[in-house]
Length: 514
Image 1 (cartoon, rainbow, N blue to C red):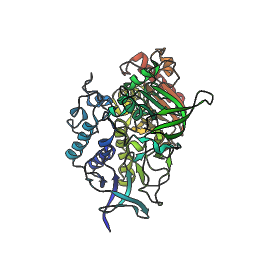
Image 2 (image 1 turned 90 degrees about the vertical axis):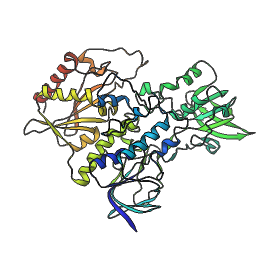
Image 3 (image 1 turned 180 degrees about the vertical axis):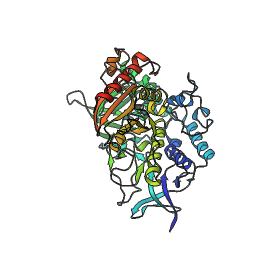
Image 4 (image 1 turned 30 degrees about the vertical axis):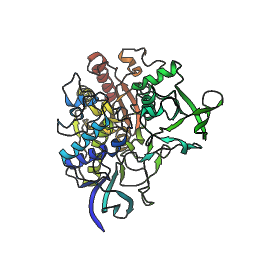
């Protein structure tokens, strides 16, 4: 029996489910959010295991502008209550996970979001009328289904004997448990380094091992890669304490006399193999989305070793119409680039996502402004946006502002915060399409702390730090690109470095380009 029918049904009341619920409620949309727990944020009630977040909470800044302050507030959900921001709940630069849990519960309470707690989704299927969501409290129908469940289960690599490793999700977090022991940690991501950091002063030896080389966030510019606060482990490795970071294939784990023999093949040693002895083997290899809820009628295609769903540019499933994904699992379009797996990134994605949903299902047009096509006016609008928008700052190289010329009037339609691949596809017929985004220099640098700079406008393309980039597309094809010089304080307003070069580029392109 069908209990309720809604245009939008959201599965999961973590940060993404709450943020999307807020946007839909503000729009007066017909939605319902289902959550199996008694309170929101179930993932953060268990993880990270050592209860310290890696998301920054920079409470003290030079700016009093709430929008700019959000650039360094990585935990707040976007809303219209200035008191309902995460820095009101914690003053710590790297805050406790329990503070985030408290914040999420208060966010839902204050906004009275329509979340049905204590409701376990048992199966999701699809028929000609939409989605059928079977729960332990009845059936809910949805025209549009958004899955915001976050990571549902651990990712277990295909290693012979992996069942002898203790998973991150169930390991003992008391450092004394590892005193005087040799410990192998499988994985080299933040959960692995979090674990190693906790036991570094207790274990006699800690090895972190995986096939892929270590990815440091200060090299990749991706906040999900290994963060600088774990530098003590790398110090210990370089200073010959026998703690090590190994690039290797783990061939087999064997229990022997109460310990573990681990066979490995080194990645960078011409096939050299070794047998290493450990007291404990811990699996810290991340998570994957749980797809067991879907029956064959709507099973989504999965990518990245089956960890996450494949997506179209509008966050729709790559193979199931009207099925969307939100939050940390909705990162397939920009893996290892912007902050889409994290609150400070997906909060902006979801603001745009709501606009696209409302356009498709409720016939509410995506907001658009008009700006004159005169180069100086266009330059001012562009520089105002990159100097102010926290969305463009956080979602660098992914979200962009879009300027589409009306060839009849010469004016531009201005859309804010669209994914660039979506914009290029949507406006493929346009002869003049500009995207405005912030980007990093992506050259290889021998030392990211000693990069030679070339502070002249004609070499702005070589800027290593985050800086504005304007791209011109014609009928979906990239035909021109203008970089503006980086700036230490992220203020792009100097006439000689930013204003004049952009005016010159736009003038030449608008008058001479086709």
